[in-house]
Image 1 (spheres, rainbow, N blue to C red):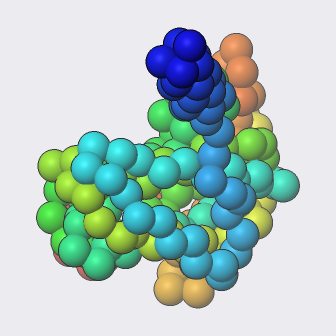
Image 2: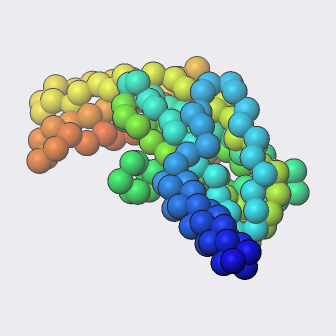
Length: 177
């Protein structure tokens, strides 16, 4: 009788653990907020995911720091489509990802190279609203790209759905070629 009761308790505990594991998949570890560092201890092969909401078209910069593991950053839409990533090809302990995101909800995933275990910290360093200048046929437009305004964004809708044409500041070496 005692043995049967013990087996029942073990079975219930295993079922409970399995239920918690399944329900934990697809959840995030919090929400990314400008300037708020989010530390996480990753197990070998693990990743951590955070919710991130963008109110309007914005240029953002995320930074991930690893104490001993080399971090990677991936931004996806809620359907899993990758929007931007920083695979850390340089194999450094600190990486930045700067990208332009449309208004909407995203998931930021932090992992490590070689699936290493270690402490990682992610922080949203900047989030700057970006305006888009429409390009209309036969109407020339101009803009300035310099150190104060390193990005100009233009949109056109002559296609099935609107597109953006980003122009970034280039160094003098790129202009001479």
